[in-house]
Length: 156
Ligand code: DQA
Image (cartoon, rainbow, N blue to C red; front, top):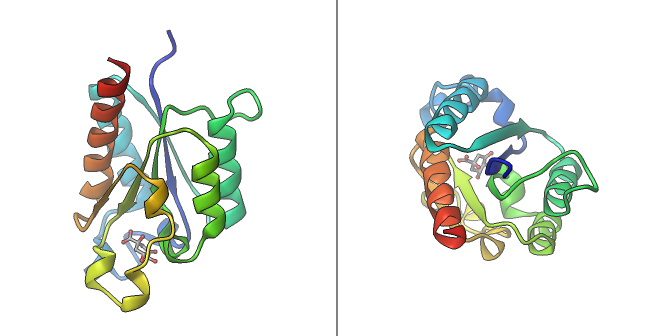
């Protein structure tokens, strides 16, 4: 049986983690977070495929491929998604998540609801099974743990 596989997607400007507004997002870089996800995934017995792009359409492509394996190179049992600013704007990402039957956790390093009012709306939240935000880089790790627990509850 193939290993459980988690797709972790990060959107625009998250390649700048460590340099970008460290007082809000922390000092850890995205490669460091990806390394921690891989290590935690190994402990939990799952594979983590972690990617970043600044392009909304690329996120849509990856989600669609993950939902319909065989049509693309991406395969996943669940998704962690930090869509960055697209969180607050993207109907295309909402539609992509709705189009695939993969449990998705919305992830943010900061707590968007404690920030500017334009960050209070999440377009993707209604298509997600849960959300982890406000814990800095730990949000990704906590979300991974929650998603794996959920997948194990569903699949037994
Ligand atoms: C973010 C929060 C978003 O509002 C913002 O646009 C980001 C990062 C976070 O991880 O805290 O780019 O998703």
